[in-house]
Amino acid sequence: PMSVIRGDFESVEIGARSNVQDGCILHVRGHFPNRQEGNALRIGEEVSLGHACCLHACTVEARSMIGIRAVVLDLATIREGALIAAGAVVPPGMDCGPGVWVGNPLRRLRDVKEAERDMLRWTVEHYVSLKEEWRAHLAPPSPSTPQA
Picture 1 (tube, rainbow, N blue to C red):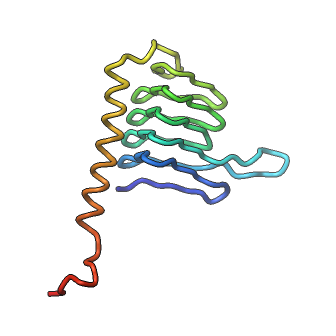
Picture 2: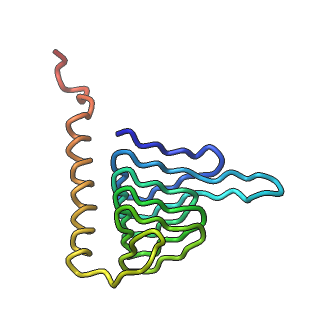
């Protein structure tokens, strides 16, 4: 709820089994002649976007996580297996490889621990399961179901 996904100038791609949590802002960058090129927003498969994060015209590769209230700016790339900590700010054009990234200014803290990888896999499975529960609950009745 209350997330905004704006693909008004370029495309927004969200991969399968990814989850966009409450309050996220996802936006692209428009093309302005003689000023800047446009850029899409690309989110890979099995990505978790924490509450109220902001992604702007960047690429987030598969099986990575963006923490609560983190900001990822134009042309940044979050590589597969990266975990961007809550509140971190990824500056424009930054390339974040696998590992835990924290702070503002952003820095690589360490490798991702196995327990964190497990948590990321669990998070993806949890949100996919939640989606299926809601889909079943909200599904329209089949034609053979008597109407009240």
